[in-house]
Amino acid sequence: MLIRLKESFSVCLVLGLIVFVPILSSAHHSVFPYDMATFLELDGLITEVRWRSPHIRLKIAAENDSGETIEWELEGDSINAAMRRGLTRESIRVGDRVRIAGNPSNRDRREMLVTHILLPSGEEHLMHDRPRPLRWTNESTDASPVDTSLGRSIFRVWSFGSSHRPREPYVYTDSAQAARTAFEPETDMLALRCIAPGMPNAILNPYPIEFIDEVEQIRLRVEQWDATRLIDMVSDQVPNGTVSSLLGYSLGHWEGDMLVVETSRVDFPYLDDEGTPMDEEAEMVERFTVSEDGSRLHHEIVINDPRNLVEPAIVDGFWSWIPGAEIRPYGCEPE
Amino acid sequence: MVFRQRVVGKRSWRDFATLIFLGMLLTCVLPVAAHHSYPPLLTEDGEEVIRVFDASIELFRLLNPHSAMIINVTNDSGVPEDWLIEMSANFSLSREGWSDDTLKSGEKVTIAVLASPSPNRGRLRAVLVPGEAQDEPSRLLVAYGIRGDTPVMRRLRDRLSTCPDIEARLDRSACFSVDADTLLALQREFPGSMGYVMP
Image (cartoon, rainbow over all chains, first blue to last red; front, side):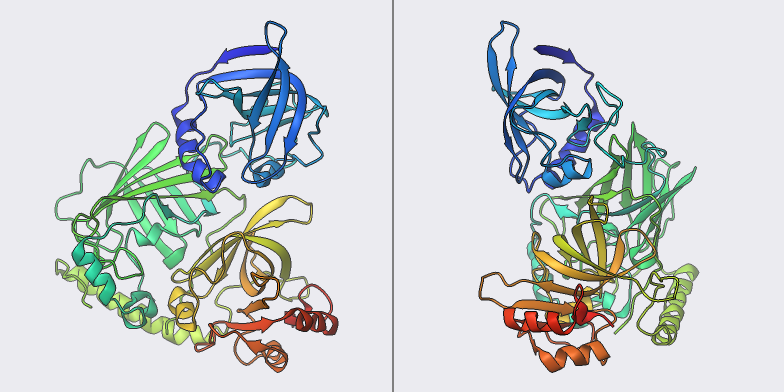
């Protein structure tokens, strides 16, 4: 039986998916062949189960409104993500009668991106980083669902996440490339002397960070290098007479649920640990978004430094929510 | 290499002086802190907790001040989870021959971790990386608690040859080459999960 449902288009959901996709599957394919604004439900028998990378794939034989049996291809989660939420190889078998909800293909094919599965066991399983509410039951396959007590608040310790990756390889200007070639890590790397890097390097690592709400400012603690970034949530522009500093001056504002942070006036010679120079006029824009289920903090940073980067560099990463995690004490042993 | 000129004012001289002072403090304090600059997780008897996992490497990056590895493991309840494993700085490891390719995403390894009080975190004690081809020996990379002149290091040096590409110049790590037969012999002589790297 086919039931068509319209649900409201969630900007945050799509944003979460945009940054979630590279992590979900080694970029084998994009999630966007699906119509994210539409939900379908299918009732039918499972005809195939492919439990493998990059995604679990299923086939279901479902009856349409005319009584014909149509076979649909279903795209599931990665095995790791599915197992994390309580699905096992034994949960779905060929011949099982299940109910599926998901987003249908944009390309008029009999394909769906699965969001909910109602299993023969009576348990419901969620896929693809979707909001917590179950659709049909009160029984989740997930034995330890994400602690939702903080909802989607950004103000907490965010644990390690993915490595930050540039969307495209950086393209250096000639002068930047010359500096990189001349850079001698054994003598020039400032970290050798435990000298902390400035932005953006300061935030581009998978170690925990913590957002603390101080109303007129947000205190962003970064475990690596024990850095504290102060984000001015009040001013419209950098105050007159602001002196350049290691972490620069950050202006923050909310756009809906997204924290946007603009940083300039960074005083540090390098963009990275490879000797890429950074100009004092360099500017960065960051967008922080908490996922729908509160389990991840997505981060996008755009680095604008036309003297050194031919085009602005865009780097993506995320941190995860692990209750009880703390910022560890800082330690750097100089050579 | 020169720092860009800052706008000079009283504040920046104070910052500079603070930096120098902190640098001096670090150099004095850290050697005294011995090989643990942070508290590890301890058992009731005050022993360090070493966890051993069969893991899949999700990512590895040489970073300053702490390189990072994220591994996928299955916990005691059979649920998959991630751990963040910390290692020495890029500036040290790269000088010992490490690169971002030393540990590759997707590699299936056996890893011993000095657990931290924070959940899902620890420091690398040792990791056994199987060779890529069937006949290729495995690599045993060792770090915290083992490197330097320690009983475990002496044990390994007596039995194993070192890897050609990684050299313990700064005592931040070491690498040993372990073929299949040698590994079996090690496991027999030191039973238990990665018994050969246990204290």
